[in-house]
Length: 157
Image (cartoon, rainbow, N blue to C red; front, side):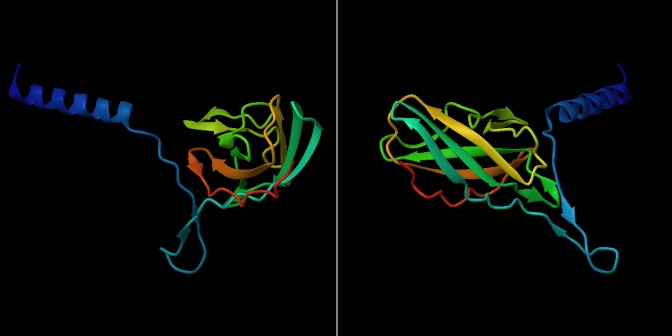
């Protein structure tokens, strides 16, 4: 095989490897101002502190969380990571109910809302064990980007 063909083969192999192994990149820009290069990058927002309403008896409790939808450059978050702080179990991800997350766009434990564009979001945390007093935080996710967790909700027994 000629040297020229070996060089072309090597370049094609490297190009194919780069195309297959390169992760997808996501970006958003907010453009304003005059001139050809005015603009700033959008940043993921902090989550909104959820309101929590408990129901049921200890050993079969449901906590309903409601919060304001987060947006990135005018687009609603594609999901949320819900974290529970319990006086008996410590910090953990929600394991039951509609607040339980799944992997979405490579991000683990994301709760995907039924209507991401709704002005508010809600989900339920269902627990069959005594968790004591609980509070929750909501972290917005847009595709592979994660914002900052909200302030913990008011503790609820």
